[in-house]
Amino acid sequence: MLSQPVNRPLPMRHFADELPAAQPDGEPSAPVRAMTAAGEANRERILDAALACFARTGLSGTRIEAIAHDAGLSKTNLLYYFRSKNALYLAVLTRTLDMWLEPLRAIDADRDPREALGHYITAKLEAARDHPEASRLFALEVMQGAPMLSAVLATDLKELVDRKVALLQRWQSEGRLKPHEPHHLLFQIWATTQHYADFATQVEQLTGASLADPAFFEQTRKAILASILGSVLP
Amino acid sequence: MLSQPVNRPLPMRHFADELPAAQPDGEPSAPVRAMTAAGEANRERILDAALACFARTGLSGTRIEAIAHDAGLSKTNLLYYFRSKNALYLAVLTRTLDMWLEPLRAIDADRDPREALGHYITAKLEAARDHPEASRLFALEVMQGAPMLSAVLATDLKELVDRKVALLQRWQSEGRLKPHEPHHLLFQIWATTQHYADFATQVEQLTGASLADPAFFEQTRKAILASILGSVLP
DNA sequence: ACCACAATTGATCGAATGGTCAAGTCTGTG
DNA sequence: CACAGACTTGACCATTCGATCAATTGTGGT
Image (cartoon, rainbow over all chains, first blue to last red; front, side):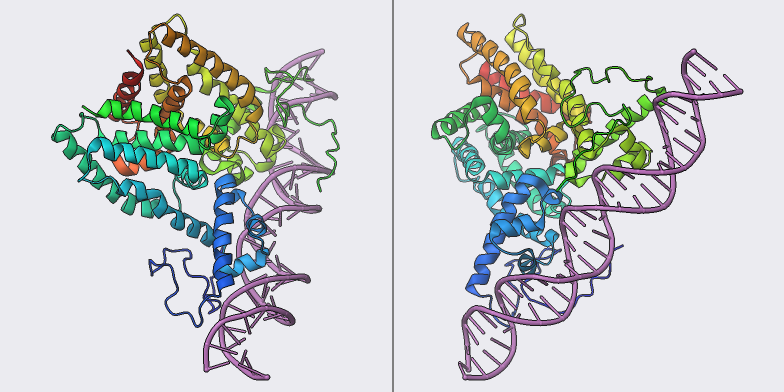
């Protein structure tokens, strides 16, 4: 049984905690005094270190002390900035989520379908190359049933995807795309691009290369584009 | 510091332990007496329960007691069959690996490329439908750098993949497949099919359906076949 | 220079949990 | 039936790890 949280006053550094912050900004409404520059920097370093650790060993697999060590702080000091491991995990997730969803938003009704989808695939593959930890973090989270993210996924992501699916359907009805269940198209793009981040170990073991290698990146991009665009463009 | 393992005699049930068993069969070389029928059944139930648990919460996230509970045994009794959590985890992995790789082996030089690849994709999608936990287990393991599987992956899987890649290249040089980097073809098949198992939560949240629904399964299969076969068949 | 509060630390607590031990009970075989 | 050894159990140990607390140091603003 958990002991009642007591809810004593204590440091205002702990804002984006268990529940999504009331202020979407993430900043505390009226802290008595602003956070020191060093403090801000520490927060960032912690979040970076936490992302790396959580992406590598998952929530339960990472010791809070390892994160602190990687960030160059003591465990206790880390707990000063984030009241609990769960709070830190959630903070990392939310901080990364926007960046992760952004490319999808860029699929715009004004653009040419071929160009929009091509850009999207390229952007996703670049994200897989530049932020593989973010990809792995979400993969781990979603694969385990998204215990912390299900709410956001069911609302924000769902809504965003619904909009894009509608757009793809419109393009289809206008004859600018071949008939093709839009959801599957999205899944296919996600799956193939993220595969190179999530399973980088395997990819490297089998091909000897990684997305960090520009030639391999371009080869991969071409392969994905050919397969996916080929099946949806008229 | 770990205390020296002591290595006392003790029960012979513990065979496939930390390291891959000397006997690939997995059976102890000459047990004083054979395992009881009930014992065998328990072993299986433990492995089943462990697969489900590990796939849901990962190695560090599952308590050994939860597995025991799901299998209907006491924790101590489970530890009688598997000397440690790691040993059990490894046993689950190896037991599942063969089943997981089998469809790839079925890609045969004698068969027609279209038929062989079509069968492979279908088989992988069926596996994703019928054994999503196995898919998730491997995904978790590989995403974390395959700490327990890297040896097997680097040898068995690598060798198998090399053979199939060579076959695909031969088909290409014979003009029976369009030129297409074979590794990417395999990755694409793996990524798209496994996606429906690994990210089932997300798929269900966004589409309201799962592979368990025959109509959705068939729709998915068609979509994947169209995209992948379309890009490699002449 | 002072002071309120941010930042940092080391000691410590307590629950969770992997694993051990000693003592059984059950069962197939001679 | 007797017994060796498979199977089962509950008590217990040791450690890890998240989290708390009290106390100290650093620092920005007046």
